[in-house]
Amino acid sequence: MLLELTDDILLKGVVCKDVSQLAAIEEIKKQVDEQKIKSLSLTNRVQDDCLNEYPILHAQVVEDGKVVTKIYTSHYIGFCSVNGVDIVIKPRFGLFNHLISYACNIYVPNAESSITSNKTSNNYWLIALLWKAVLQRAIAMGQIPKEYKTENKNLRYYKGRLDITKQIRVNLTNASRFYCSYRKLTSDNTINRAIRYSYKILCDKKMGSVVNDIREYDDKLAMFGVSNSSIDISDIENIKYTRMTEIYRPVMQFCKAIIQQNLAESSIQTHNTTSIAYFIDMAELWEMYLLKKLQVNFPDYEVYSPNLREREFLMEDKYREVRPDLVIADKNTGNPRIILDTKYKHYTSLGNTSRESTVSREDLYQMTTYLHRFMKDGKGYGIFVSPVNQEKENDVHKIVGSEQSIGLVNLNLCELFDDKQSNNAKEIKIEIEKREEVFINKIQSLLES
Image 1 (cartoon, rainbow, N blue to C red):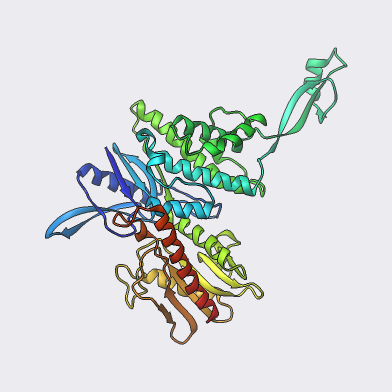
Image 2: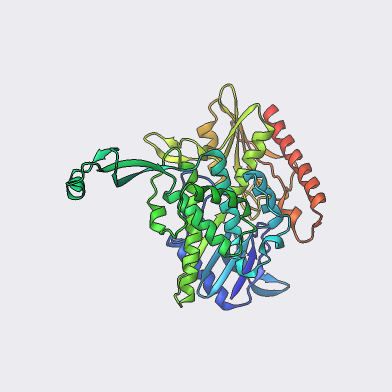
């Protein structure tokens, strides 16, 4: 049974039509509680890869005077197969297209159908797209990973060190040869083999059109002697990353997921009940997009993500790590001017109380902690940013007895891609640019105040 859903940031939900779907959802919740389902990260940040929220849940609501069971999704997209139910949580495609194209600098076709037309490949197109994104970033920022491997060969010349035992055994009567042990720099390592094998799997799953621009890189790896044979998951898990290869860590996590899904599908075909699951956090993509947007528009400030820097702690002895999403700081002094908490949630107002569609009490208290820890001179703003419509134009409020303020400054992109909105790509692009400009101007006003 197939259950196709879309990320439900607008909190609409869909009516559940089968009790087996509810059973599958309960099983997913159980696996999340037991930390059996992991999240795939688009960055190489140090983080707990367990899901911090249920990707899917159900609730009874009253609709048109009747009690119905609705299914809701959170900020995760991905795929899970459990108890005979395949659950696909797709992104709000137009928004996803814009975010990943801008944040990761990759081309995504305007129409979802152009990459999901093959029904047998629907479970792979999303992971293929994101695999390509993290790989292209690693290629641009790093170089082809190489490592030293020990070679043992019987040579006509001396190289490295002599293997005395084998020299006596093999060359006792042949003084013209040397059995040597030496280290050789090679590209045929786990990282490159995993990339080639994942590319092969995706092409076999009819995803060649999605990852076609990786073909040249695959050919280059082949030319450098990288084998294209199957690779064990344990080999990927045992990779020892260096400063040069750290950028490939997210790539390896996606390679691992692709290989695991391929293995699980083979097991299912032999009547094994192995479940498949991978989820990607849309909140992370939203953060990556806003980071790049702010860096481009505020070159005179230092705009960065503390998640990608050295860890910060609230207390001495490295107690209680604190990690705001984004910081806009003075370039000369390094003092933060604005701390941004990028929320891929339905936050439409700051709210004078915690309720549906207002900033939660937990998030509000967390922002207060960020301001206390990072605002060295006592001045500044803590701003929440969600991709939905904002109820009030000016929703920034000063903290009692402080020079700091907390507020909500949204960049409403989600509703542009609601079913009722225009499907004209040119019109949507113009509207996106207008809304982005309004958002940047609001942030500029805060920096100048």
